[in-house]
Length: 491
Image (cartoon, one colour):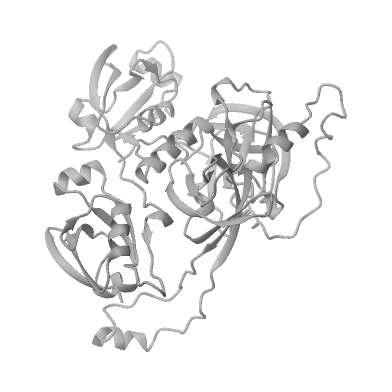
């Protein structure tokens, strides 16, 4: 169990992907019954704009002029379009084709029209001149094809190096050099009331510029436990997802990710992922193909004034441990239900939401000193940080079927540290199978240990081995408590 925080909320934050399915989050700070409508997709018809628009930059004394910023940084922002695989609505039948049960039930299954692939639009920005691009994970989720378009009208097919759902960050790569890249700023120096600007593709309108101010920092959102969001009033709409948030120095300080909306469009509350969080994830994705997040295995809740008084604290601070997961790092270290975490490695835990962020940023396997409040006194404990199981690595980790090459047809992810220790082996966990792999009997949850006798340690290694293989290959697979070899015909 990962760290949890109690958030009771009655309104929702809508993800601003220029996509056809939009997820929502609740906002605890807002009260009152609200009606939430899905955010329209990026191809929807444009509606008349609100009369509450910002005056053109520089027309009023004291307002900033963003023209130089846009001229210099506009070319670093890209339009991202994706094609997503069609989802079949057919009911899963028991057994396999040819089995009596399968054939019996198949005759009663209604015929469904063939599902069509869907498309979506988002934004991104170039972080290095050799073609690495940052965007939101939800922009490229389930994408079978990703196209990046630059302001000079050049288009590139992009590879998804990896995604991290917990921070909503994705790293793409295009085969190009000498590209214009952004300059990275420091979110720590941002102040509420400071001017910022966003560039993106709302509703597919490329390189659109909007401006506003920082409304708040370190904003906690439900299900956004690992991200201290920057809240702004910059106009953000579907298609802006993944685009950069600039300060007046022309430096990227955030990635536009979410909005609060009752109508599906801009309502004055926009949320951006701090760029330092994003760059940390980018470095991990680029180096390992995945991002690791620390865990200690507790559920927590906020400290109210009444709780602080009942536990003998002088002020309401820290994270109250509501439960401890059995055999977790926290239990092994001696943390108990009712303990209050006041600090980690000397860094104060002012709010309960601070604890998941601090622990989540730590590398699994390191030891950390936790200051715990228990029975009216503080104690220091050493805790060995665990690891949250990794998300599936997106398109870069998928070894897809191909009409010309007949690949495996697998979506896989690396083993977590705990999984490696349990298996006493390296390997890759199967997240999905189709094509030759599915036909051979590979199932979700299988662990691929070796191919043709060569131990598998990573996604890129497996991809290379498959690319060089011809005819049939033999996969050594761990399924539950059994290891078996499964032959696969590559065509």
